[in-house]
Every structure is written in structure tokens, then in C-alpha cells.
Length: 255
Image 1 (cartoon, rainbow, N blue to C red):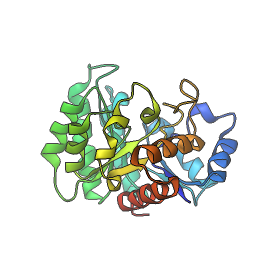
Image 2 (image 1 turned 120 degrees about the vertical axis):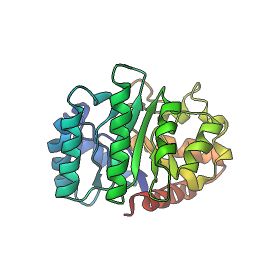
Image 3 (image 1 turned 180 degrees about the vertical axis):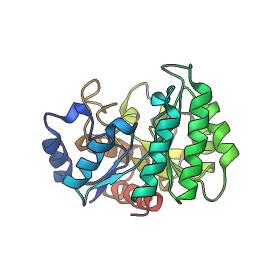
Image 4 (image 1 turned 90 degrees about the vertical axis):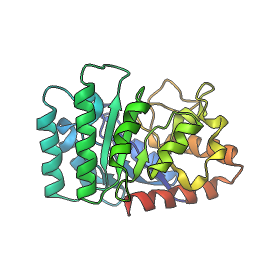
């Protein structure tokens, strides 16, 4: 049984004391593939170091996270372009719109999202979408960019059934993580209506740890808790869910 964590920030400072141990714990449980989203240029070196340490397990993305779209976003977008010119990446992400923390740079977030989608298309890469309190705004951009060359993952999906179906209509898989284990998470109530072919697993570690670790630092080993919850939701064995979601990740990332 091979598991794929399609979204984990293993380069985060939260792992500075035990990064190797955290990765080894996950690998020991069968989590062998880690897809690493970018935040901004200040983390690029740490991401490259992580890849060097685990070349068979770590798969990097590049992109500008919406909460890091500030006055210097043009410089950050140039960095993303330069990285794509220099080497191989497996996705452009995480990108999108976040209106939870700050709405000051909404226009810039929309522009950065659109331009990074266009970069993904240019390099024939998937996108990995961050959306918080911004479904309408994200869907507006996706509608303007829809087509066979638009595909990827709607990371940390927290919407309702109709929003799930709409995301899938844009060739997006739904990234399901710890929220599915929360009593107030709600997505477990309708997820069985979404075919398993549209689902990938993620942790978003060190954030959003699943029950029973909620409120603590998340790590990729806790993907097992997400897997077990999804097995219950879909009334399938953990092995079947693991195989299906890893196959789905291969379809998205091409590896």
C-alpha cells in the first residue's frame, strides 16, 4: 500500500527540530510520495534542500501563495517564472485567493492567480488551488481560464456538494485532509456522492491536523487518519482508497 500526501509543507520551520524523523515516520507507514507546495521565494532554498535529501520521495511545486501576494508580487511572480525556466516542477501551487485574513490585495491576488494559471498552461503543468472564503472569486478566474489545458487539485476542499461538483467541472481533483475528520467539517456528509476518482489525499502539514491530533502540529504520518476516515465514508477498505487516491495523484502530477 503506497500513500501519497499531495500537499505538505515539510520545509516549514515547524519541522526544524525533527524533520528527518517526521518524514521517516510517514515512510514507515507507507506514505512514500510527498508533493511540496511553494509559498514564496524565501522558502525556495529550503525546498530544494529537502528534495536533495529525499530525491525519490519529494516532488516540488513552484508558485506564489495568495496570502503572500503583497506590494512586491510582481517580483515574486518573476521568481516563479525564473524557476520554471531553470528546472522541472510537478505543479504550479499553491496559488489562488484567500479573503479570510486580508482583502487589501484582492485585485493583486486575482491577477497573480490568473497569471500563474497561464504559466501552468505554458509548461503543461497542473495547478494546486488555495481557496479560503473566496469560492466565487476563484471560480470566476477558473471560468475565464477553463479548457482541456486547465487541470489540477482544489487543495483543502471545504465547500459544499455543489461547489465540489463545480470544482470537478474545471478538471480539478478535490484535496481531502484533516478537515474531513472534524465534527464541524461537514464535507464527510456528502463526500460519498463524489466518485473516488475525483479525490486525492493530503495533510497540509504542519496545519490542520486530523482528529485525534486536532490543534497540534500536523505531519504526513497522520495521513493514515484521513485514509481511515475516507474508507469509512466510501465504505471501502483502506487499501482500495490508498490505491485509488495514489493513482489519482499520478494522473494529476504525471509521476
